Length: 465
Image (tube, rainbow, N blue to C red; front, side, top):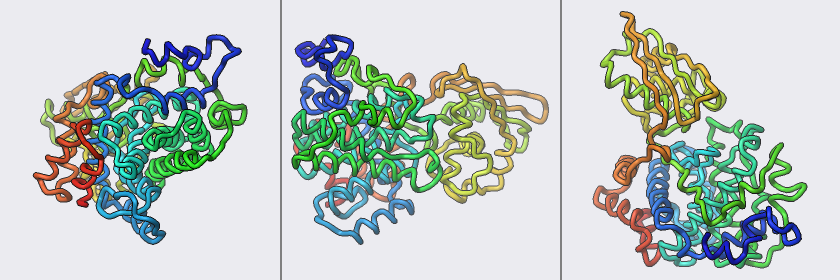
């Protein structure tokens, strides 16, 4: 056990002496503020660097999306001190930068996924951390540590109420992401343990996100507002703001109000010993993560069958029940809806051999060949399958059948993308936005962010300052 936990056992294990019990809000606050940098394992810091590279790429790749442009326009209209960089260029206030960058990080549905909770944690956490880090002139290694700590806090808050919280209709990226954003920003702002606990409690009062918004612009707003609200909570706490002592775990706190069941030990057990970033995956495809095993299977069948779509008479995908709940849109009419249609994802993966941003435009979902094949796709559920697995059968007109089973989709922790894979994804996303040489340098700087003397060095490359 690391010395941080061994010197204060009652902080990290609520099963011990109840007379000295400390709640989750205080425990996570102390962890976020005081966990020593040198206690974060090297592999976890590298995972944060990979997340940084992925985050910058998908944010720049989504910058031209209408949702991002609307948010940019509103930020400029509202004005304020220009203390922070917009990743796509220009400057605005800290809170507006966190909002817009957070929206951009999630608008393509191409961002990372914490496999146990379906949390897309880096968007809210990194957007808040970059704004705070730029304001403070933080080192790159401090940014990575803040991300690792913030991600840990967000994931653990989510774990304590998963899956009930999600099943009730809450979008965990917004509702839990705000805690991670507060923790990351608060760490970079130098909050004490008490201040950090107040920041987390204040974040609880601002947690929001509804799954009804999936397929609309407002889904990406969840990430943006989580980033801004978390940053705002940290700034308030730095100024002396006082919040409830048990904002997370109290009788009328976040967990109790927004879930039918809670397991606090999942939030505080082995804190600082096990790291949730190790259970985080990066996306190779720009759509709902639960569709990825089906996409993998369709791409494999495409390569082996060498069959034209016209020859296919039936596609049957057997998937986890969550897939139809999250991605049951039978006939998407716009690109955003296509990201949440298992039928579109299966069809486009076979036709195009990939499922990147170009496969989820309005034009893509309206293509006649896509519509024709999409109508041949059936989806069945099997509750024994994890969300990272799928079975797919493709039947041809001549009676031949191809079958593929995927047990761990590409990009999941059990089948991770390599650093080179993430770099290739980054370069494809920023093509046309960053000159090739600058794009390659930016990718290298992200992966080596621990060596940055000031995060503003990276932001000047990305945003062209």
